[in-house]
Image (cartoon, rainbow, N blue to C red; front, side, top):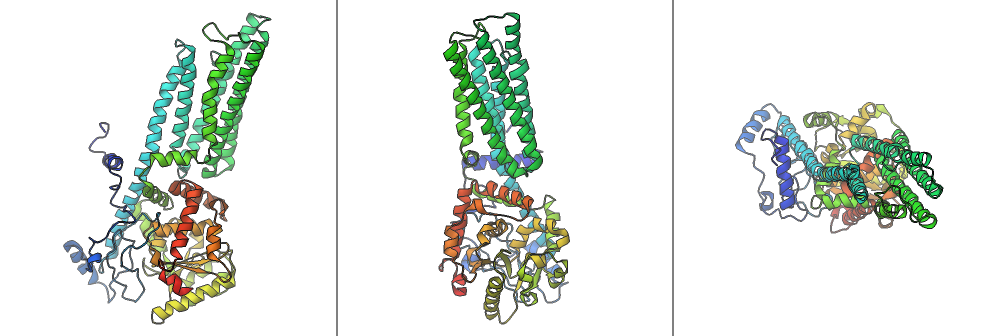
Length: 587
């Protein structure tokens, strides 16, 4: 704390949040609330409308004087409280304000309080900018807690271990203890890199490549027990009694050097052909292979020394060679066992992030946003947000996902909140069944809204194909700007990664189960598909998108088993008649 100056605003706030998370987890941040929290104290819970403050009223009066009959309530970014939101003047449906209701364990991050009825576009932009800043700050807190802890502990262990290992004046056993400590320090330092840290993953690979190369040089050339030192002893003082053992020890050191070099080259090659998240997974596998190779070499040396010449010593200050080889083995075996555990990294990070799981999901969602400033991100999202009336869609448009820039003219630029539904579906499902399900939902919507055509968001029509990457960076804002999420669930829906991410982003950005409509396609048993869902079987058409979305899953949910349980839980809750009455009526 003493290292933080009062002028370092972000560090001051980060330290404050760090202490608040450590001492009292429920008070993580004003952004996060418990899913079982009581909203009885909110104005909406008392049946009262949300009343803006005097400054907001004066600003809204000024802005409303320049508007012609439209109250400019173009929707809202979801609230942390259940305040009542006025409907748009043009009759577009808005989200219910009857409380948060049942919520997924993952629906945690809310982006903004609802707009009051006469907010101007500038006021909306300011509010959203502040909310995005707080969301990014929540992600920074999560990074401070996980990455900061592992970096600090790993650096201390590495420094202590390297001191014990490099000091030749200390007894021989300090080399064993020192090497074990600095090796674990490097492993713990590696845990500080999250799957969403695309640049840090490459830095981690470079750091380990350099470390392995230095180890190889030490094993073969510069170490006090290196192969070169043993070879010189063998040449300068040939001893027939110890010649066999010196050759074996020399070959063992060369083998360790080759193991280090091979693993380093494997990391270099992987960094050239793999995407960041996949590279991080491959990195931990290479570390396991390296630890296993050391176990094999040291165990072999121990057995050979014990059989051929138990009394052999590398130097007068060392014990018998077989005992030295045995002393290195326990730490190497322990390292190999830990690295072989599939969920070791996720569990270790989850322990350090204990009590801030909701912050992890919010931070993962922030990685889907553009890296630009929050104001610029919102302005981009507002300019790119579009909706299309269902009457303008055709069966041919829903038949395939072939990009067609001319379809953009069928949609129109809209404000957040003016889109009735975000259409989530798989392009690999049967087109006829999807079209039939969409028309069924459309007719139901028209009956409930006096014949008005619904306005929906669909990627093929509402995304600018010439700027698709930037548009996808605004997806969380697009989802929060739609009044409900319409899921057309077919046989391949649960195998498409984008579809699952859309569902969780909607819930995590404040979406509620009563705003989630699931329509199973003709002939598809949703319950069976949910029970058979396995997260490791999801696919994505673009490798770079798949890598980024899998990093989102890793950062937000920890491991595949947890993610699979969350998906099953969401679909079971959403499809339960008591949880989602609209879904039951649709069926």
